[in-house]
Image (tube, rainbow, N blue to C red; front, side):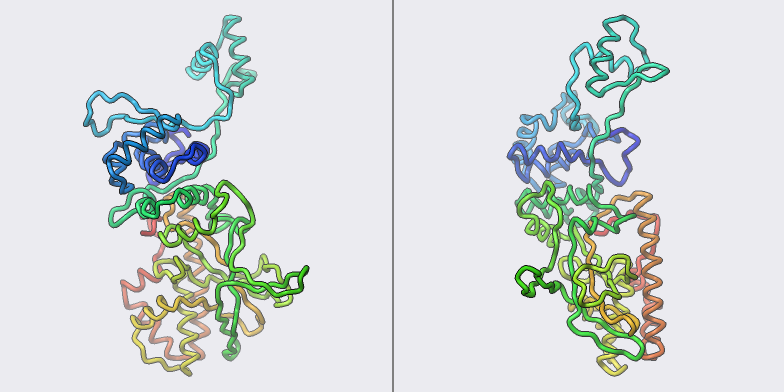
Amino acid sequence: MTKKTRSKGFFALDVHQFEGIRQNGLGVEEAATYLSLLKSTDQGNVVSSGGIRSVMNYSGLSRAEVKRAIRNLECRGLIECLEVERERARKAERYNLPIYDSRRSLSLKERGIVDAIEAEQQPAANSDIQAAHRAASKGWVEKLSDGWHIVKHSNTVAFIPNSFVQVSEGQSPLYRLVNVGELGPIMLAAELYQLQNLMDERGVPLDVVRGYFHAENEERCHNHRIHHLYPGRQHKNDETGQTESFATAHRRRWWSGEGFWDNLRALDAAHVTEWAVYSANGKTPEHDEYAYNRPQTPLGVLRNGRQVLKTPESRPAFMAYLVARLHEADGQITESLPQLIEEWRTASPVIAFENASVSHVEGVSILRLTHRAATENAKVWYHDLCQECDKAFFFVETVARSYFPQVSGIVQEIQNTPDFKEAISMKINECSMAVQ
């Protein structure tokens, strides 16, 4: 973890070192303390200027709990306490958080040669050359045509947004997870951050964890169809011949081990994760497998089982809900826009609005983290997401106008309400990607 890998909006967590907390039998207090200290590191993500008070503020732990956690982390070699000249120096370097390195350790002689090569000094004496060769066999240096060079160590990291630890208002996700009192959810959050790939996978890859939705009833609406989706999906067990149901699939085992779904539910309750629901249209009912590479339409974002207003996906999702409500009321609804919004958020429906030629729709939910690091990739992903959701919104709105003239007035009201427009659309800007 070099200084160039650090951004102002996040810090890099060495997942191997963090896993050491669990391997050493430590708990939630040590995990929260470790993350709080890492939040206060320099651009190298190693030297921390954080102190007991900052850990208390970030995590909600008491002074005695923080002191005990620091002592336990130091005894296990996960952190190193540094000497501080002035006890109350705010920016003093207080802790060293070493990174994990699978390479064999160097002898004193080999370490001196590696340091010399790093300082662009080539070994000349026979003993120095032999030491360089030994260091090379351990993976620390290599000899090229122009001399000896340092081998850059690439450790496995998870990029954690600063907002996961510190927020301007209210309690941070870390603070809330400490109140849960279990180590598992915090460890799972770090693992999900390591796995998340917004650009290519929209979030955590589907082959790791996903949620399913199925259509219980479909209503014909002229040349289109309204599909009401519900959590869970039915599938036929080929061995028993029985129809079974499953709400979610967890394909791979990684460090989380046992209690995966309990930990994930704790993250959902703490508003650390969210599920972005998309339609998989065109799949015929007789096929059990999810239809990959089919046209997909955003159907909303669920956080702890509730539709979230401040996401780009909320615009087409809310518009699909309006169409369904208009269809049920024969084109006439009397509720005001605020009432409709509250109904939508309370009921949290997942509704797909498709061409009538699409006989079947099912939903698949993509797990992602609510707090996201402010990187260029995340900004590009968010910009593309907004464009995709705008297209979906335009499709539903255009079709709805021909069936329900009343929708024109509602759309105009949405556009003339700045607060609602900001909440329901939240266009891309230069601000942080964090969602509080």
